[in-house]
Image (cartoon, rainbow, N blue to C red; front, side):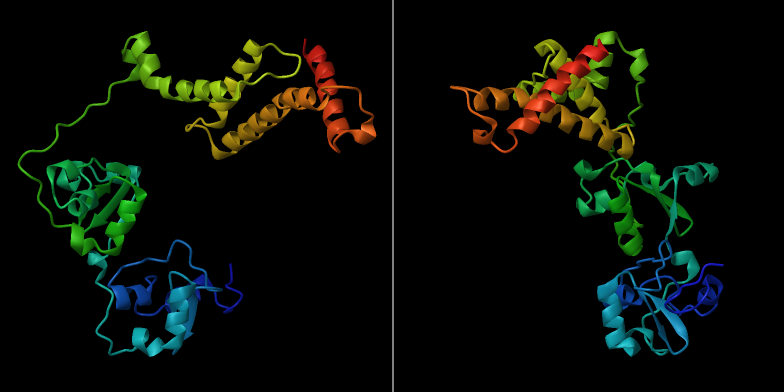
Length: 294
């Protein structure tokens, strides 16, 4: 089993000797009346403390320091601050778990309770929640617009759970498959924004790659740009093509650099800038590379 080396206990021992706040931060609960669960990443080497034979987990180093200064303020047996009973503790759900609870329906007809409450319960503050950001609370299911708003609900569910929608609500928007609309509409809805950004970047840079035409240089730049900023790609792929895009821009900059440096009468290498020979050799090497590609 995995041990927490700094405190020399196993996860089973932690569970057996966990304090009355469980995996919730006692400092958040006592000082702010916030429920902040720390069970996802319990790290006893930094954010936990032992007090009178029990373990308490804090949400960060600052709250750990506060706990260590006055532990009796947070862990005293006669403290009025207690963790709510299990059925009053909010629980995260994902989209699959929400579907598995069918036929139970989400509350507020799927609108985000945090957006609505923080927007002073106005009609304009009604925003659809996402099934991937769901919470079960008081045997009810709520969905949220973003992960940040779900986290806000988890901290103070009592503030947001019991709300009523106005009589008039926005109509339910049925998604329209892109494949069902005409070609022009498909391009406008599917790729127009990305292509416009890529073409704008080309217009600003005006790339000319050594030994390639302006047209080919522009097309290559657009291809790299679209791959580097594709929101549906993985972070690894985006970073890979961002590096390629940066290298492409660096190679394109060789031409204006050499033009400005080699202008005028002949100068020996000793009189040239320190990076001149390196960039000239790199430029000439690109010609050999293009010949091999052809």
